[in-house]
Length: 204
Image 1 (tube, rainbow, N blue to C red):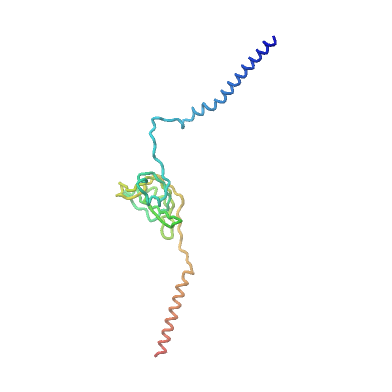
Image 2: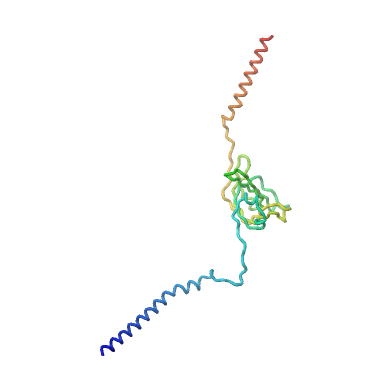
């Protein structure tokens, strides 16, 4: 009789243990199901065409010496605006703007011609020149090594332009020390002239 009770208890314990294992496995699998079901970004679309376009985050210096690998590619550069905005067409809807870059280590300089809308060019507050630091722009667009639209010019057709830093104007400051060499030369010249006339008067 006791053996039958022990066997029954073991069966009940085994059954309860199996149920607990099943419930544990069910709860463990619950977070996995919605993660894969709701994450639509990870679903592979077999009809989607491959996208090989990307942005070259490069420099104006690199574009100045670019080869055919940069041709017709989307690039992004940062540079200072110099010179003036020049009308690129008869109706004035587009402008040519020159971006300038200087290598701080080697001192080498490079420029690139940027083709942009007149509305975009109007956002430029300062063009670099003597006594002026031009507006620094970040330009993203298509680089043409030999542009078919602009007589083979190497240029950058801007699609997005943002202002990195506004330009500044450096007014000329009067430095009295700069006049010292000239004043010394003038004084020496006057002394020589005075000595010459004195000697001439004595010879008479």
